[in-house]
Image 1 (cartoon, one colour):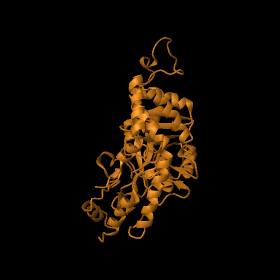
Image 2 (cartoon, rainbow, N blue to C red):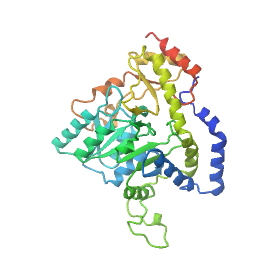
Image 3 (cartoon, helix red, strand yellow):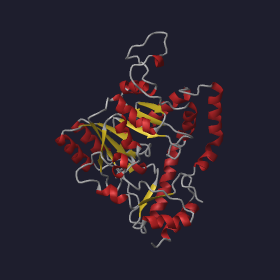
Image 4 (cartoon, rainbow, N blue to C red):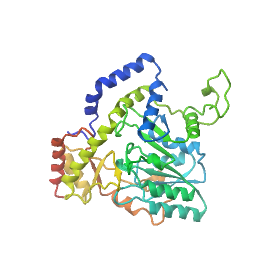
Length: 383
């Protein structure tokens, strides 16, 4: 069967370099917060135009850490799309806040700025919750409309998080989301465009004071220089706040350093795969992906819409072409989140797309001949 995401092809390319990087970690023995972690943080920040980066255990913690640092809690509203993975709204109840679900744009699947503003104003008018944070999601690899989102957040006094778990490396008018967001978060889950060989995540920012606080929070609330430390004592035993254990393993950092070195090349290769799909499928699907004007996607997924999505999925399965459905049930329709607020008029676009979208094999090493087989299989479905 054709791989949906071919991690083995990348391993074949980088194998000796990754083996050497892992061997180096095994030799020096600093398995947690070793030198490769700091090196990776420096290079991640440079890659996406941020002053600072802070690694952590996974992409969900990357979202939660800034909320903790900003003292988001009970009575606070966090606005986010419903057409996303559970990690995005999940962090709101973690800190005692409430997610407020917002609809998506029908073309890019990213959060709809008009509906966001209506949702903020509705929450303000009701008065039960305080609008505090917007989490925009770079869904399927492409940036949200950050110029508009940033303007809305500034005007209403909200923090803006760019959830770039799928979109790390995406740009808008040549600028990374860091140009507009207070923080950018990402995930290094193996299936992501920049993925490790296990879990991991990072938060990118321009504020050194915020970095210091996040560094404390990721290591059990350890004392920082600003908190005042006792000379001669390890700050991790001097706890200034309630934190968590969210450190990136050194071996994963070493692996990511090798992958980051070729990441820009892989983004270009993914774009070539997306272009071939677009040329071959434009006339047989309800919709092929639309990238925001001026945007560059990292193509975490290649998602098309079809009038008989489930029939197409069954047809492709029979042809040994793997697919995935992101996301079959929007978050506001799922039991743990059904009681939380949603923007005025509901989320009709999110609900419609959930019945139409299907993702096809996508990775930087998808050979044209293999991709032609996928395209032919889609075109051969007459459902």
